[in-house]
Length: 413
Image (cartoon, rainbow, N blue to C red; front, top):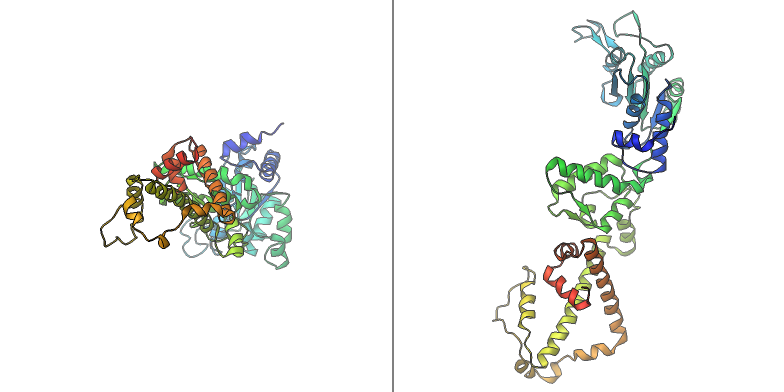
């Protein structure tokens, strides 16, 4: 029978197309119709809980109980009672007879998550269930039978645990008839943005807000980040951004502020920081500021030239004052708009010949490069936002009026 991996992923809400993920799903579908025990391995947060659900739903046991047990969350003193049940008076607080998971799930499937955390004595009893289907309640001498399929999962290296005497070797091989390994998120980077979009849409629907979106540099950032907490960390990160950020368009520096540096330092802000002393967000901001400043200097040169010809571009100065940062101290003297007459009164030795600036190739080379970068940044922003100047200006961090002027300046209409 052909296995439709895409249909399985859609059914269980699994996002991603990496070969390693597809292989894990395929193995789960292959072993599902059998009674083979499976061991799911992978780091914490990779979604190991999906594999036993797939196995159970595709097996002949699908109409019987499915119980997931987190072995690491149950205290050692009560875990045998949870798994196998107890008789009345078996221990202090045992006021009545209680059925354990193996009795309740008879005919179905039990998923033992974090099986490496089981105490050694419980491992002995679990091995007996796997081999004979028999168990005894705590405080009872009567043997009971159960027909349960066991799928276990762990984020620990069980071979090391065996060498250290913390896990039984015979139980390991009994559980690990088939091993299904799930890759960490850093091993399937092509899926990271797909997961982000899904989580962003889910949280937008949940909280009745517009979905958060990522700029190109933010997409590169999340795809380069190592995600030590895997899918769980990515989901929490997306939820934080969705709730905390009023600006629905998130750039790389904003995204980075919600994440701790990855231990390996493999994503690009750390690499650049080690080489330059600045992180990527700072460098992007610096480059943009220089580019913006270059544009204003170019505009100022044209204004001064216009003033010297007898014109008064009052609108430029009014706009310049309107766009000045509020943190700048207000001048104590009355604002004066330069006129040709006032300029002519300046001593000749105090006048800077702006026209001569164009005659120095070394000085012109950097502004030309910056102008080229600025044109490219504006062009890409307009393309991403389908020529909507308001959205493009927000992404570029400039006013819509400034963007309109630059569009005219560079002939980008």
